[in-house]
Image (cartoon, rainbow, N blue to C red; front, side, top):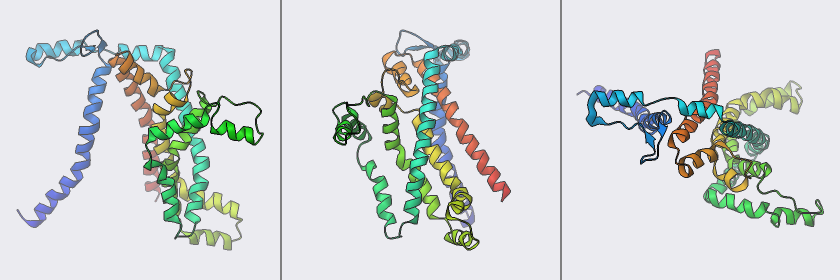
Amino acid sequence: MSSRGAQSWSQRAVLAAPYLWLVVFFLVPFAIVFKLSLSQTAVAQPPYVPLLDLGAGFAGLVDFLRGLGVETYVLLFSDTLYLHAYFKSLIVALVSTAILLLIGFPMAYGMARAPRRLQPLLVMLVVLPFWTSFLIRVYAWINILQRDGLLNSALLQLRIIDTPVAWLASDTAIFIGVVYSYLPFMVLPLYARLEQLDRSLLEAAADLGTPPWKTFWLVTVPLALPGVAAGVLLSFIPIVGEFVIPDLLGGSDSQMIGQVLWVEFFANKDWPVAAAIATVLLAVLVIPILLYERAQRRALEQR
């Protein structure tokens, strides 16, 4: 084999690696979950029917396909429990992502405008929480937000409140935990984009007499939109399926879809319903990804 042919095969192998990864770790598991969502719950092990009997041949395959149905999806869209959990998750994710953007953009902008020698330190400070276990950090917020916790003690000492506030087991606690936990996912993509911003464009706008606030909205923000989109996706998608934060910091009336999925799978042993919840959740989360990809394609075509 010639060197050119060997190089061609090596390039194909490198290009095939990510597709193979997606097939093995995404498409195959998704196919299994989707098959489970079309099954029916049974008091058995495993807790669903039908089961594919390869020894029965073609007749067994036909019986297997006949046993599949969409009853779990009908239940999913007719029960207000699941619809409320989906709606709650989307609202929490949207509000949290908006708060993250409001906090993260000024932070990233300040980091990008800081002296070069300080920027690595600032990035390390943003990443520093990841050095501690996620579960430990969420548990720490329980001690901070409880009635006799640090937050109420500080507010009482400052005479901002007269009696302790019930922060814990509320939507407020969920938003605090989510914003704290996912802030680096918003800051880092924004910083990476703003740090590459051509300063000469800002200087040109200033030379033309544009006020700083107008330069920010007409030059900085449009050029930072790819970083905004990346930060929004990196935050919104995992927040929708969040389980730990609402389970530890939220109340019984604050159930998100991740909690419902956990209960159906582990507590109720209703694998088909849990699989249907996961399938619909994945379909919902694919929508913003497709919109982002479409926007990126249009931007490339306009260039």
